[in-house]
Image 1 (cartoon, rainbow over the protein chains, first blue to last red):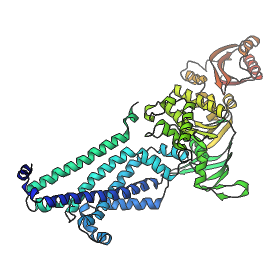
Image 2: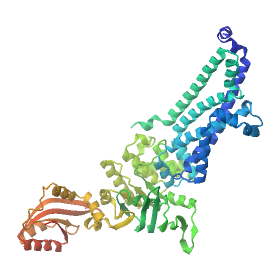
Image 3: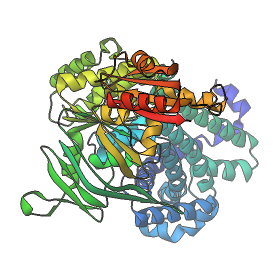
Image 4: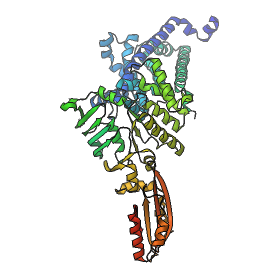
Length: 232
Length: 359
């Protein structure tokens, strides 16, 4: 087995330690940044929907503020955001490199995207259901959890999947500015040292990771949709 | 049960300012089925949403039995019992909404919940135990005759069944008032019939007061005791359903009454010149309305004999309105002009309303 691998990708085998390290850094960035994004973006998305003029808790100030922040950060390309945020990242985490230094820009890159996705998923919930919930005496938390999040669950799973995949993409970009992870492994060893097998492996690996996320997302979303709903 | 006084409600959108409810006052008695009819945009939806404060009126007050009087001062709600004016809390409004059931045109069920969970929705977080909720829901399922659909999802039900689930859900907290917003407008005639019957039964069995809004006079005719006709935010006519049907005063009320009576066809016939109004020598096209006191008399043949006039019936129709008969005849009467006039006077004196449609 080892012989075959040595033949197929000799350079990878030489840098196995670095490779495993990179993979683990990617997963760390992905899970930590992903979790924070899920929480912050989720809250922002919910806030955007409920503070709309026709929402359940209209609030012009909060709504406009969130709109502006989301739009500004969405329009900055991630690679520029990375550089732009370096001073801020240093203040928060004490460093701007490594996994620790990548979390802040990753969150800033993914939150606006996820916020919009959540907003659109929740906006698809039929307003009639909200009205019915209000008529039954539900308050704001009741409507958020029992109507919005519950009724939009299949869509939410779908947008979480999309965001997760795009976050994987962002972690590799972060690699370009010293965050570590598969991205920097591919650049530093594959590109700069002309070890093509390393680049190829990274591509295949990312493909596998993305496919796994997609498959999990699709399965969960389908489960949550419950086919029975659409039979007549 | 419900008393609404001088209610005002505007909607301001980008370019229009709609006066949705314009100085409406009305009183709904306990145990009554109170119909509110009007075309879309007449303000009936807004009016009914003010009753459970899904929408806040701008001014006016609403008294609901067991809850007291809530007054609106520029859209801010106050409780005004015992001379004191205290601002009402959102929590109080939620309690009020819990004690008023509401059903909707498009049912508004939670698609991702089973029938059981939909009906249990208003019962959760009310302090009831799981067993009590279970027992309650089963009872409600039985009440609306859907026991076997307990674990189905709304997507698997027909429109009529969905509305039954919505009714069960609306009744979960034993409300004394049920608001119905066009509850049968999205249903086929059979389902409409069965939902109306269910509402009537609930009204009789549980004594629940129902306020229903609709644009269909047939619904009013079938189950309502009283009706208010709305146009441009105002109540233009109000009263007992039978009275309104037998003697509509406002133009819009006449239109509504016509739509549910077989006699509207005469307009088509006149339009198509199947019935000719111009070929007249002493002929008149008349419309006779027989109310519950005069239905069933052999008036036509008697008049024809005694006054030496010919009466040919063009259209005739008997409606059941609020469980009473309401008859209508459109007939062509001819003879000497003075005979015709005397005959019509005689018919009028017998409690039959006479209208001359054409010469």
